[in-house]
Image (tube, rainbow, N blue to C red; front, side, top):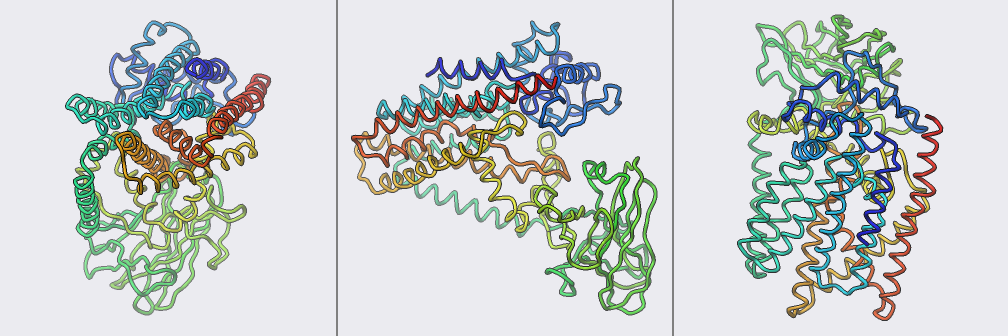
Length: 623
């Protein structure tokens, strides 16, 4: 099985065209930059010559000739040339390790350097599978179950694709196996040695990948599971209650602020922030800005993200909404649209009934700044805004425009996108202390934290995203490759979905049996391993699922990929195979699990032969 796995990964490493693994250019740039500088670079440091060499190599290798790419080719002379996402937000250990071990290839062409790092990934993948073998041997399972688990790992094509790439996920998946093994070993036989090993691995996880940090909680869970059942339940319940009370207390103590909007008033007292009110047109809240007796009035602003600004440049835009005040015949301004140094708005008189307002303008193609502003009245009064919308084209003047909570990828075809977020003033988020955002700034800055919380408190967004996110994780775990544009056929997903469904049913049945069984010594070890595996699967999949809230590019929508579940791939396969085996009659279990192994092997072969090789061949023809 180890040899089959190595051959599987090696095929992907050799046959996949250069730069065709997800984010490979930017991961490689980080590695090469460490070699060039001799140190870990900061977030804003880059080598223009190195970046141009990588971009030139991508052009030379036909990266943009991919038959399914929607990307535009690079302009090598572009002063703002970028290869994609800045990977220097990730911990540096993997990149430093790859830079150090591939140092002899520094003088080689860029493509040869890339292949050298891919070969390093193959070595790490070999160690990953060997660690998986050792882990499975700890579980005291029947031989046919062990073989089926290893076959399901060795023949998983999406896992082989990830483990052959230039990506910190390769090392993260290896460390995840070690974390699970160390926590299980401590839970089975507590000792100071395995306590220290677990602590060391948690420190390593912190320095390998931030998505690995939540999974590292499996180590303290192993400490908890090593205790006698009465103590385990008491301590677990105390921790759960403490966590719940802490979250509740934080939600009550931390002040709230309006999601997606910032105050730009000269007099920016807290009273000028959004206030919920019963004087609303739609929903449960509205924007409420009150002008004081003396001094300038309040103003709220939302800058349109650069990603969206480029999409909107050169187009006709309409900014619309509904306004009213608490007094009659008050002079004020419509919502304003600012592009570059130009502000477009109208002055109007309005009163205590809701009035529809809109402005329409074409913004230039060289727009470098785009924002919407809401102003208070010109005299002492309170103005209310509700149902705001910024769309391409002309506003219909009614409620047919969506409320701006969903990105374009989540809208039905033909539905206009509202480019304003929180356009009805319904979403309030906690104001995170600057000390916390300062600690996490390199990995998750304050703006990202705000966007995460904005999605977390948005039920409409959650209803639209969660079902499709679950499907995306399932498909990515088994049969999505490259940059996410290559996938096995729907028939394979249907067949595997049935297997996974039966496996989950068997896992639920097995959990019930373990919960009801009177343990013997052998059963106790199996029960412990089972519950630890369930914890590991829950941690890995829940964090991969919730990662969809961390949208790194404002204005775009990025699904959480199935590869993020691979930190829990070994316990996931263990639970799946044992669950399937528990549904089979004892006299047919061996034949059933052999059949499972053959099926997964056939799936891996067809994924390579009928999906990946034709795609790569078409890619080379396009080149």
